Amino acid sequence: MAKPKLLILLMPTLVLFSCASSPKYATSKDIDNEYVYVIDYEKIAKIKEANKKSSWKINTLWVNLPKKRIKKSELNK
Image (cartoon, helix red, strand yellow):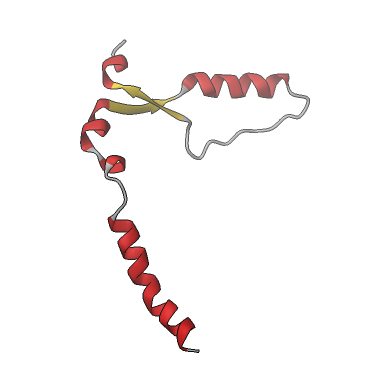
């Protein structure tokens, strides 16, 4: 019976060590500053066109509009 209790006590420690050893690239501010998210109107148009051609008429209600990630240098083009 002591082994399950020991496992339960060690589990939070293992989780903390695994989180501490995760790579830092996911939160790199340099990479985040190069890109910006914009609404993907091309994808919206494709979905609307597919809905017109479909035999099933589905009303699409967007909760979160589709977005794409582009470089800041391409934003002004």
